[in-house]
Amino acid sequence: MYFAVRQILNSKLKTKNSKLVAALLDWFAANARDLPWRRTRDPYAIWVSEIMLQQTQVKTVIPFWNRWLRELPTIEAAAKAPSAKIHKLWEGLGYYTRVRNLQKAAQQIVAQQTSRRRRDDESQTKNELETRHLVSYKFPENFDDVLALPGIGRYTAGAICSIAFNQPTPILDGNVIRVLTRIFGIAENPKEKQTNARLWQLAEGLVRHADKVAQASCLRGQAGSLPYFKNSCSHLNQSLMELGALVCTPRNPQCPICPVKKLCVAFKENRVEELPNLGKRDAAMARHFIAFVIERDGKFLVQQRPAGIVNAHLWEFPNFETNGKKKDAKEIFDSAFNFKAAKFQPLCTIKHSITRYRITLEAFHVCFGGTSSTNPHSKKNKPGTRGTRPSENEIWKTPAQMGQLAFTAAHKKLASFAKNCILSDR
Ligand code: SF4
Image (cartoon, rainbow, N blue to C red):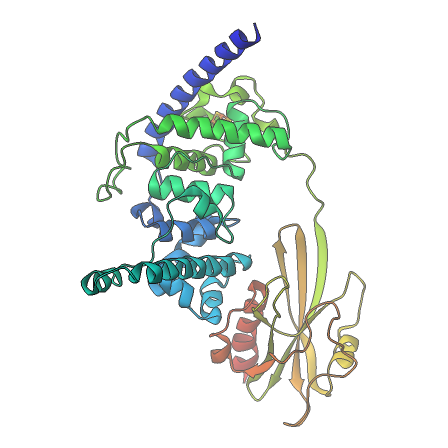
C-alpha cells in the first residue's frame, strides 16, 4: 500500500516536473535578460559572475564584472594579481571575503595544475612539452573538485557546473527557494534541515528532467554565437533564478503573467504572500561611529584595516564606535590623538546598512595642529579598542593617492567629501 502511494506521488511529481521544465524553458528562451556572463561559456567568467552576484544585484554587478574580466581575464591573472589590485577591483561590492577566497581558489587551481604538469613533464618529449606549456589553466569540471575550492558552496558549485558545463547539478539560493516553496506550496521554514533537503531534492528533480530535454532554442537575440548544449540544465537553472528575480519577486509577484501559474500551489490556494515562511527576522541593530577626516597640507590620514576582521585590508579614515552611548566627538579625538586640532568641525553624516546593521557614521573635519615630527596618536589610544585603531599601515595621502586605494563604501564617500568639499574650498 505504502509503495503504491509512493509510486503515484512520484509519477505525479514527474508529470509536474515535466510541465514545469517545459514552461520555464520556453519562458526563459523568450525573456532572459541579456547579461554579459550569458554571452560566454568560459567557466572562469561564469564563476566570477556567481561570486559577485552573491548578496549583490545584477545591475550593480555588471560594471564590476566587465572591469574584472578586462583587468584579470584568466585564472592565472587572478591568481597572480596583487592583493591591492583585487581589493580595488572589488571596491564597492562589499563582502570582501568573497574576493580573497576567489583569489585563493585561483591560486589553488594554478598550483595544482602546475604540479600535475611538472609530474607529467618528466615523461614528455621536448615537442610535447612546448605545446603543453601553451595550455592555460583550466577551471575544474568535476562538481566535487569545484565544491572543494575556497568560497564555493553547494549553490555556487551547482550554478557553475550547470551553467558552464550543462551538468544536472541543482541550485538553491534565496530566489530559487522562494520560487519552489510557492510552486510546491511548502509551508515549513526552508532553513529547517528536512525542508531544506526537500527543496534540494525538488531542484534536483527539475534539473535532472531538463537533462533529458534538448536545448530547443537559443536565448532571444543573444546567444546565437554560443555552441548549443545537447541538454537544458544550464537554461533550466537560469530560468529558476530569472523567474525569482523578475516575476516571482519577494513583494508584489507578477502571478498573472507567470509562465507556471497553472502549476503553482501558492497561486491556486491564494497563499503567495505567506510563502516562503522564513520565520522571524533578526531585529535591525543600530551602530554609531565617529570618524575623523584629518588633514595636513592637502593630505589626509588614512589607515588600512588589519587582516582577520570585517572589511580586512580595506582603507578608511580613523574612526571609533561609540557602542550606542552618547559620546563627545572632541573628547574621543583628544584621547585618541597626540596633537591639538587647529580646526575641528562637523563634516557630514553618512547612513548605510550592511546585513542587519543600520550604521551611522558621523564625520568631523580636523586640521592637523602638530609639527612634522608629531606622532598623531596618543598613547592612551591602545590597540584593541573597539573601532579601528592606529597601525603601522596608517599613512598621509593626497586625494589622488587615495583614489588608488580600496576604501569601504562609507569611507569612499568621506574621501570624496575630503576632495570635493574640503580642498575645493581653498
Ligand atoms: Fe511565483 Fe506567482 Fe508564479 Fe507562483 S504564480 S511561481 S507565486 S509568480
